[in-house]
Image (tube, rainbow, N blue to C red; front, side, top):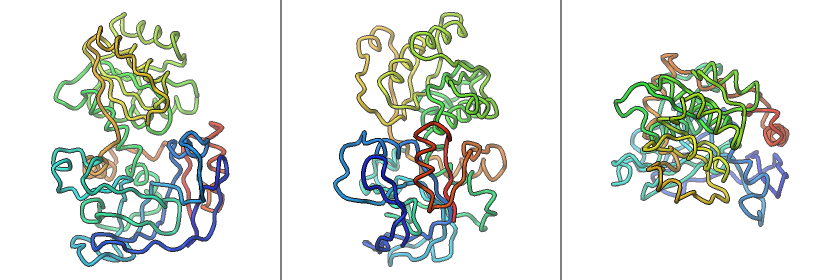
Length: 342
């Protein structure tokens, strides 16, 4: 099959690789009709996750049509149009039943999401089927559900939103696709005021469409002071950390009011947690890798109803063969999120 592959730092190619094959009777093969580039893919692109010893496929967000299923797959068949969560689960183990499908005892991942085909582990537990084949105009919204919308939603839930209380101020640290989806999630889950921390005008406009009531363009101490001013010196009731850097974690902890919780979903890189500050202020930290399958049915319903339009995070579409250009655009912050199409 043709696949996007990474060969080294900044080296993305579209090459021929072997087709994926069923490995277990619970697997499925999905023919991809739409994919995209994730901000977390840039960690590998920049070399932040260590050396790449040999070329490998890349990409973990995709939607498509089932090509083949294993002998034990009961709920899906060839021809079904499905959304593929980036993290696969059986949805029956004790961790899945507790709502933490991202720590499933049979956890798997999409590893060739920017290709012609993807292998899905635990198809019955992972996949979500659409009753009808969607119009391609829906692809951006559906693609967002495979990762970034569910991840932004997870940050909001982990911060305490959606637990029954309404109102209050939510601050979202990060204006990538996940952060923007966090803004949408915070607004949907009942925050009265949603503050998006963003320095980029195009992303600020998306944040406003998603429900941001305030924009803080400053970073570091200046940004923290701006949030304090907006909240009359109290701090935010809910904080969503959607970046994963040392600065973003520190900012998130400092803009939270005493007793609040930071919902974090940014993949941590070189983070030194301010434990003493968290201790002094009773600020909690809760989150991690999003259990996409937990949220996917509700997010799909909201999307099909037109209540949410997470596909607005895509501001560029390119053919799969031009994936390298998509990586460059996102790396240089010339695009928020790039959709890949055939």
